[in-house]
Image 1 (cartoon, rainbow, N blue to C red):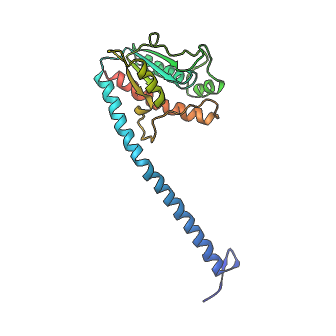
Image 2 (tube, rainbow, N blue to C red; image 1 turned 90 degrees about the horizontal axis):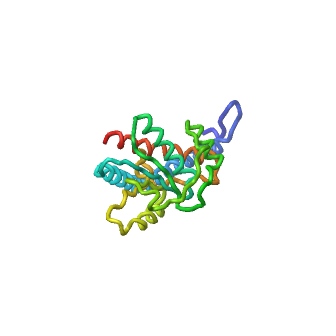
Image 3 (cartoon, one colour; image 1 turned 180 degrees about the vertical axis):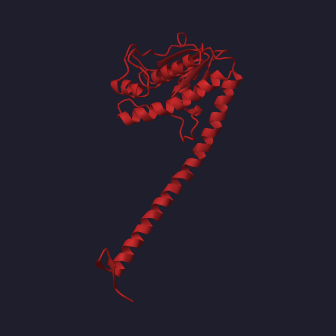
Length: 218
């Protein structure tokens, strides 16, 4: 058996060639196993997302016709601001009559959206220039449904209405995502690069689009 072979007109030791091919095959196998492991780890979360999505949609279907909606995030300068403008545009295009607002759980009032959020919104056809933040107030921001971006926001708002018999529907906006996301949270893009804003707003578009569809079908 020859101990060397020709590769691209060069004599290469057969053992070296076999070692390289073995290393390549091993590397591909490791990547495949890692990919499978990620999918297996994500499967329970994706199943949980499907169940949460069904519950959220059921809550909206069971409610009387929504006349007011408030989106809430940390400071009301990125996520909730964008969601409010997006849903308002969708509903206006469909001749909707739902009042849509936004607020943040942390102040102060009157802050503009950061330039990164304004630029990302502009890339998606929306204008956040006029927006100014508003701190959530239980009376001022009373609505039929309140959509939050993170679990702690859901708990905090639920506590505000715990003693009221006519509490609003409080849901995580991420639960409406048509795609099988493994987590509920819609990541706060503040302080991150443009790509993070784009990913965040893309996900909000999907969730708000589903909400608009449900409102339009009432």
